[in-house]
Image 1 (cartoon, rainbow, N blue to C red):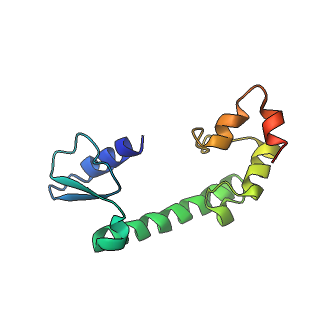
Image 2 (cartoon, rainbow, N blue to C red; image 1 turned 30 degrees about the vertical axis):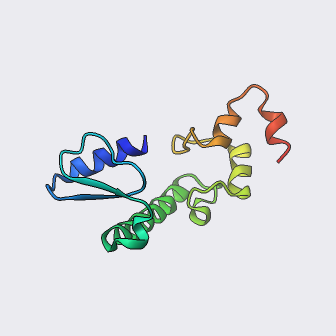
Length: 120
């Protein structure tokens, strides 16, 4: 899923230039030269800059989501599964914005979820 999102983002830019990916794998289907660089954010200035921009944008989006869906603490936890956020999910349920592949979300869909969630 992550590789597919990267592929879509790069192709959507429509800039025929070498692509540097922070990580192990090159997304398939990118029509330009592409290289994966492990810990690229620590060694490639362009990847480091893109990482900062992405984090600032994520924080802004999480603040907007927090205003639309109060109670989850997204303005503070920026989407991470903090104890506060997990408690809010137990109390309020999930939204369409919750990533259901995140393990607490997968567990919450199990028939015996109460045994697992109550033990936290």
